[in-house]
Image 1 (cartoon, one colour):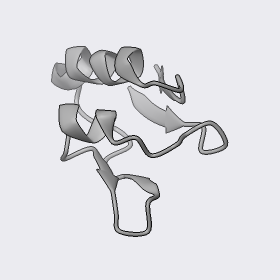
Image 2 (cartoon, rainbow, N blue to C red):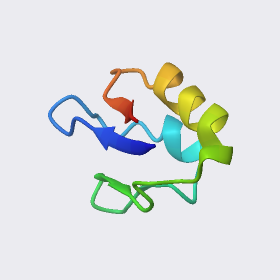
Image 3 (tube, rainbow, N blue to C red):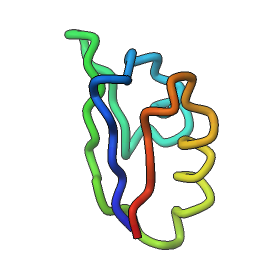
Length: 63
């Protein structure tokens, strides 16, 4: 599983960071950073929640 972010769509709302702060981080420069692009399969439900709750639908999962 690989996390992909379309940074052209992303507004750095930090919703994903609230769900998985060890995977997503919005820094002081107001940009989203993916800290772990390949979280383990045991994190799938949490990553799917981040995908679903993203206000701009800029996060996706590639298998």
